[in-house]
Length: 130
Image (tube, helix red, strand yellow):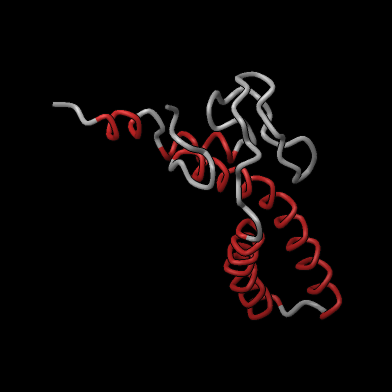
């Protein structure tokens, strides 16, 4: 016998929703834009009308961005310093620009991925229909 709960949960697969969020698209349809600005989430999808204002991404994407950028740039900084010994100002300039660029690239994508994850798991108001 089929359990109603398992059927409803099967409708929202996690990884496709996270991938749609990473691409900054609606986790439901994958077509509509998730963000209306750099980090502002739309109240609802203009294509499928999925409500998106329930999300609670809060500081999670910022923490993940810092974690990823730190784990990429810190070893790179060490390798470049040990291997090439560039001038301190050159080293600082290159890595400052790299950290800022990588952070600006990752932040909206991680926010979308986090919203997609929340949507797929019916978290924070993304309630099951019915």
